[in-house]
Length: 209
Image 1: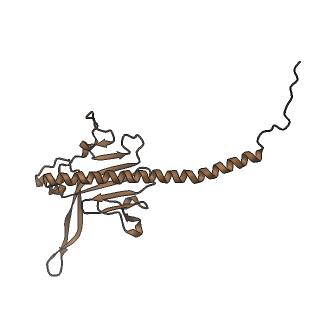
Image 2 (image 1 turned 90 degrees about the vertical axis):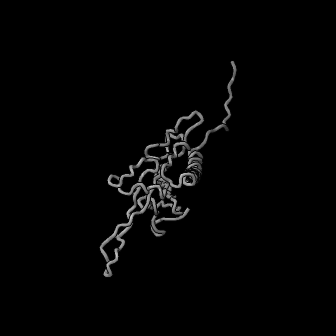
Image 3 (image 1 turned 120 degrees about the horizontal axis):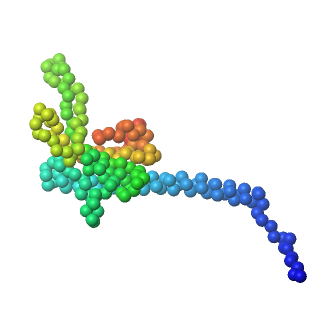
């Protein structure tokens, strides 16, 4: 009969050792996870900015050929080699979700045409009309507009300016604005301040990018 001998020095991990390992792993995770999340947010922000600049370049090329931003349709930028339109681009709304070909988007980019319309208040003491405010007229650049002013007033001038706005769908990143008037700004504190002409004041979170 064979005799079996056991090593009395062999032992497993103690509870304290396991607890130390768990604490170390938790500390590393607490440091690494926020850093990784910050890296992802910066990557998504950079991608949105890059896409907005690409659209802006194409808009200026369109105007150089057509003397107006009107009629611009960004769909051709999002067609693959087989001629299929990316499901991330909505032609009717002229909206794009990023990252491209992702079912879990982090940003939605929208493109519009706009112009300012003066609204006149009552006359001043000398009889001169006083500007009350500027009303912003907004519509899609690719939309066909009837030039009959009785139907659409003066909306045919919608191609005079463009604006691109990027909305963070994760609610943890900046909302962005880029327009033809040279405004390039963003805001993380209050998304409602990001319109097609402004991102709010500096003390409200609006900053340039």
